[in-house]
Image (tube, rainbow over all chains, first blue to last red; front, side):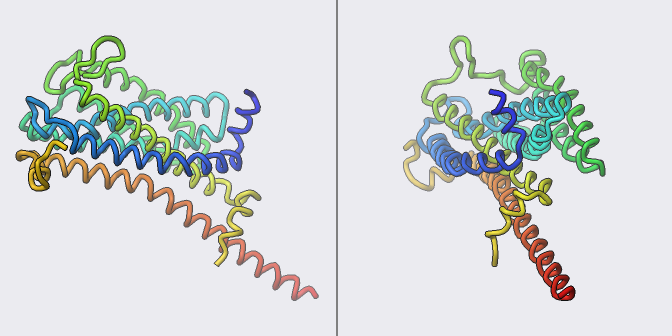
Length: 247
Length: 67
């Protein structure tokens, strides 16, 4: 167990293992994404109240779920780098920010487009939507804060603190649909008890959620690999790696 | 398949524009999410290789002068 942690802190090992994982994970993810999208767009019946516009759900809900999960990853990585000074955790935290921001952007953009035919408006300052916008700014804040420091160690610390403080927003997002009931509907999928969604719509949705999770992992690993090369560019293993790229 | 033909798939009873725009934006963002780090990695490798070659040329010139 401890050797695993030890290896996890080693940049060349992380670079190698992430390359091996991505070789299988990336094609599998794209396959799941194509299958899920085709299933949701072509092979499901329209919603009896929202018609075909509900098909946006198959990207809106997974994007929002992963945007939230990504924040946990970023905050936990930030905590690890604060407490144990683990450099790889700092790399993970930094690389979570752009990926999480992208997924939050997708959920906000598709939510706005879905809102137009369903609620008759692109945007409303509903609690759920506003707290998701705050999440988006938190991700952007970590990104900007990291670039604002010349000293990267201080930047890592400041970003870790910001991402941990931002955790207060997460339960607000979860509970917002129950506390302030306005336009946004409450969750339809429940881990305990009956889900308020028919199985024919649930299964493609679950497939899309899995695909989006996998996509988050792929994008995070790809970003981390580039960041590792950048940080370790003076080290021997990177020099050796750059060698065969001749010509 | 739910839709009878390609045209009804595009229109989706008037919701087509919203649905297809959402999917287009999503695919574009996801594509960028994958392509940007891949290109950054490739560019870094090229840069590091270039630095190495310049360093090798410089050190070869150094030893040539010393000899």
